[in-house]
Image (cartoon, rainbow, N blue to C red; front, side, top):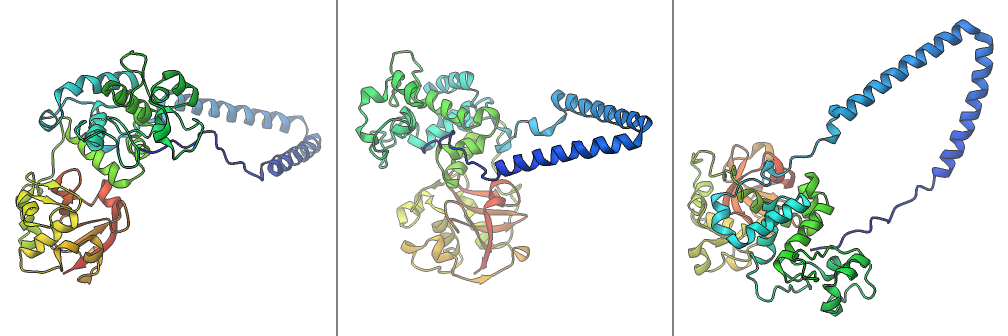
Length: 388
């Protein structure tokens, strides 16, 4: 969870005064020249000029009416994340989301216009549906939805901004203090407190924050990034949000067709049967349980075809990117290793399987096949391809 930038911190264009003065001089000079010119031209030309101006004015009015009526694409709400917003709960959602939370998400959606499944996804990523111990992060984020105290009460609250832990609980949960300092904490259940450790207050506050940052207007990615300034976080939240409503169809290999290249096909056994764990996949128990991160999955896949990519314990995207022969993205073949700039340069790695797709261990899905020819992965693909 991150702070909201000060909306009143505007930059001033230092040349604006000069522009204004120049425009005024040009305006006066233009009027003087126009008067002299019209005096020479005579009445007929003046009437023609006036008629032309009227026609131009009518055209401008007509264009304005078209724009107001909806003729401009600029006013359309962006459709982000495949359009899976606020629909009926999917089978995956029913299996993963505790039923007691669904009415709270939907009530918050009704009040703030933020899709219920987006709130569920944040809840899943932040505290695994309120199952983590204490619900206080190492950096001081608190409660069911992991708010920083300053974001909850407002960044105008006096004192050291790093001293969130020193804000008294009774102050942090006081709606009057939150209103005074411009925070996002909400008293959703009407008990007189806005408590980040109360599930209703926490979910409604998250909806309030996301709505403020554009989610209610369809700017989903922008709002999620505002919640936590990290690309990997956006990917993970968006992934869960899409899976939680009907209509989501996971990519399972494009109809099941295999490439014929063993290293590109061997990992399919883990699709739907694995779990992403950062740092996982580096011991026998993790591998037996299908617990991988992106680099350990690539290491495992190559090991299955007899290719040693170095010590498993120290394998990372940094070690993998130095292996093999560089290949142009235009000449990629199944089995090539591809890299993506996510939370850092070369932060994610996978194995290309052809037709614009790769297989890898993604944080929101575990081992899965993803499309790198469009959307998020196309944007994050950095062009690094290695043939090992």
